[in-house]
Every structure is written in C-alpha cells, then in structure tokens.
Image (cartoon, rainbow, N blue to C red; front, side):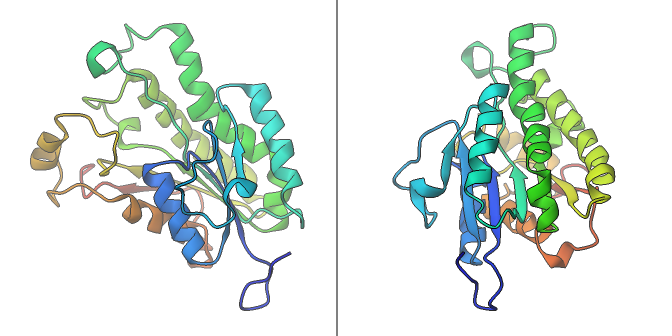
Length: 251
C-alpha cells in the first residue's frame, strides 16, 4: 500500500458524481492533499479528468439500480487493499426537468421519476454507507452527504422530487450521525446554494442579485474545501451538521 510522507497509509476517498462541477473540484482538492481518490460515476472514465490513477480508480455505476449499486460496493471493497476507507462523499444527484428546462412540480412528476430520483439521491448514499460501514469503521472515517438549499425551501428551478430527496437526505444525515457515530464514523452534510457550474439554470442571475448577500455565485472549489475539512481531523468533533454554502442565501 502506498505510504504518505508521514509514513501513514495513504488516505482513501470514495466520491460519487465525480465527473463535473463540485465532484470534479473535490477530486482536485483531495488529490492535491495526497489522498487516493476512487471515483464513481454512471459514465465511463473520461480521459481529460485530473485524478492520478485514472481508470484504475474509477468505477462505473448506475446508482438508480439497487443491484448495480450492490455490485459496485463489492468492487469497491476489492480496491481497498487494507480494508480501510477514510471518507465517503455522496455527491451524485439527478434533477429531471420538464419540457423546455422548466421545473417539475409535485403535480407533474410521475411515480417513475420520483422513484428514479430517490434511488440516486437518497437510497444510493445509504446503500453505499451501509455497504462500506466496516471499511469506514476500520479507518475511523467520515461520510459527507451533499444536500441542497432546495431541501429547505421551494426553489424556482429545482424540481419537487429533487428538493424532497435532498430534504430526506438531510434528515438521513442526522439519523446516520447517531447510528454511525456509535462506531466512530462521523456523518455530516453540506448544503450548497447557487454554485457556478455548467448546470446553472437561466435566471440564476436574479437570485444572485436579489437573494444572496455576497452578490456572487459560489465556486466549486469553495464547496470542495468545506468537504475536505469535514473529512479531516480539523472537524474531528463535528457530527450531524449540515453546513450551508450559499453566500448567505438562507438567512
């Protein structure tokens, strides 16, 4: 097993939704700090991505499929030579839109869409954490769930299924903090607001002008830095928290 400069085993992060935006920035942040990053995405490994090991540390998984997720967990375990996982970041999420990119309301969203969204955004995170609990326990690891400002208020662009899945994930974070904390695993969440990524909806500039005290978008790296802190000893007594990263939009 590769060793870090302080002769300790190299720390390992498992990250879902790594291919763009916040996930991409998180890979860069942890890699720069010397972590090994195992990425999970529904896409195959893209050759232009920044992580060191490339396809050897990338697992293609469809989190909307419980069986595919179970199979991925088994593969992840095979890639942990010392049986330790230091951090799990549940970043993958989907937010289906109506025709023309409009938000899907609770009236318009079909049951199939509800189930698809919850499989990825809610059930995927708990399946991964439960499936890898022994590896997280062995490393006194940390779990970070990525929720959203849309989980606590009606958002003009986020659909009903996405928003309620994020609210459920915030509640799950508290439950996990209690249950996993008993075996030495910290579980926290971050709730980003308007972050400058490729998936921003038209009209976001009005939210920036009218609702965000800092009057600017956040950057993916600003989110990644907080994720990193939550996975290190700096946050060793932080458990069950949901940290707002939104420039004051929630106040």
